[in-house]
Image (cartoon, rainbow, N blue to C red; front, side, top):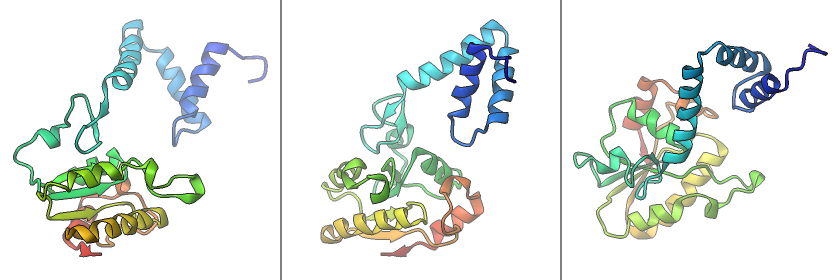
Length: 200
């Protein structure tokens, strides 16, 4: 394509290619698809991105994504507030919700401890988790971090912090492939892993 460089198109392709899991061919297909949109469709698409970026924030309680102070799960009075499922990302909470097996609440860490990537406990939402445990309502914390070295290290670190509080701390059973991510696991595997969790 040397000599056929249209700067706005090249920039659009670059932006799509910067997204995770998008290669150059897919980025080109997406860019050309956008160019075939009507002006109204293109504006709606751009508005959806800016609205999501401007209006979505972290839930004041569980640190999941929300467009209000509290996310829908934390606002739901039918949820079991005695159990918190700790996950690495909002995508993991969504994956757990898809099982329809878990009726407790969540806490999103927004990452895992990873010294190689300069991510320590202070970069995660661990302090916010500990503050939720102070009133004595929570009786169990389920560590549902990914079954990776970083996820296991994060689970062990948090479980050591919770031991003195006398709160039961469990870990998802290994029905999920080691080295995999929760968001890619199917509902049956996640449900079985949830049922077979064990105490740390």
